[in-house]
Length: 149
Image (tube, rainbow, N blue to C red; front, side, top):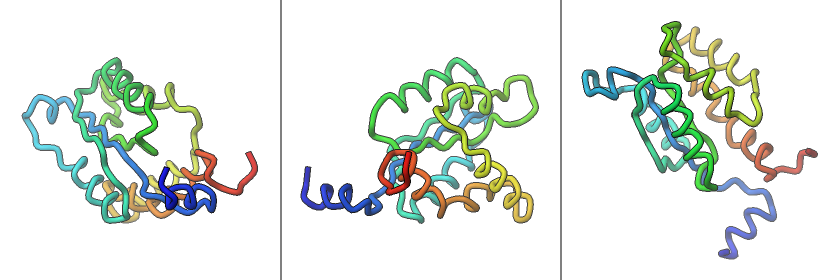
């Protein structure tokens, strides 16, 4: 481990956060529509200093979503996975349910803030409303904070 990395961990200094983006859309996965939400999420994350290491588009298939999320969370090369799409009322829109079943911990307040801020601006602005809170939240969840467990 480099001295700089050691000092960051020792002093709980923020490091570059690593993200993966999973887009859930039958039409985008089939190539019938160009995905715009994934690139928008990636641009926002990178503008805030995140490193995006993976980007994938899948159809709204619960089992495929589950498998991809499990593969991505099995390693230690990712701090957060951002999903977009698959959150409507259609019978195939199962992203929230699949994600919730795999999540180790939910933080409902962040979702509520995303929805509230999004409704004030535009439906696609939800991530922007919490982007500055995520580094601290991830530090706490991953033990890189002085907060007690």
